[in-house]
Length: 241
Image (cartoon, rainbow, N blue to C red; front, side, top):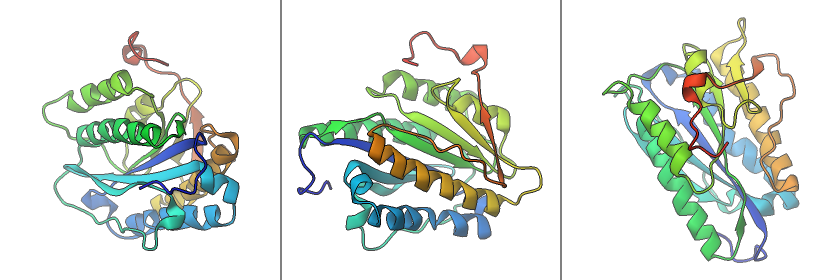
C-alpha cells in the first residue's frame, strides 16, 4: 500500500476525494469528476518532492458509500478507477462514517510503517441535498467524524448544481479559515468541477512541498470562494478546531 522507497519519518499528507455519485451526477458532471485522479497523477509525475509526500484516496457516496481508491501513491497506480452513478438516493452519513474509519485506519498504518502523518485534507463534492433517514443522521455522523478522528481532517466542500450552500457551509472545517467553493451563478456544474480539479491539483502539490494542507484559493471563473464562519449550532466544545 505504501512504497518502501519513501524515506522513513517523511511527513506524509493524506488527501481524500469524497464524491457524490447519485443519479443527478450522471453524464458530463461525473465524466469531469472522473478526470480528477488522472490530473493529480500527471502533476505529481512532474514533481518528485510533492509525489514523495502526499497520498491520495477516493470515496464515493449515494445511498451508501464505498472506497473507490484506497489511499496510495498515485505514481504506483497504473489504472485509475472510474466513478459510476447509483440510483439509490443521496445520503451523507455513510460517507462521513466511512471517511472516519478510513482516516483512522490509514493513519495507524502509515505510523506503523514509520512515517509521520500530517493532518489529512478532504475535498467533498456534491450536487444535491442529503436525504438521510432518520432525520439528523448525517449531522450526527459529521459531528462524530470531527470528534472521534485522532487527526481531525481539513474538509473543503464544493457545492455544484442543486447542492445546498448552507448545508455545505456547515461542512467546512476548520471554520472560519477553510474555504467553501460554490458554483458561480452563470457557470455549469461540469465547468465548476473542472475548475475544482485545478484547485485540487494545485493544493495537493503545494501541500506536498509545505508538508501540511494548503488550499489554493486562486480565483477561477466557475467557482466562488467563500470563507465561512460556522453557525453557532455547529460549534461543538468537544471538537478540536
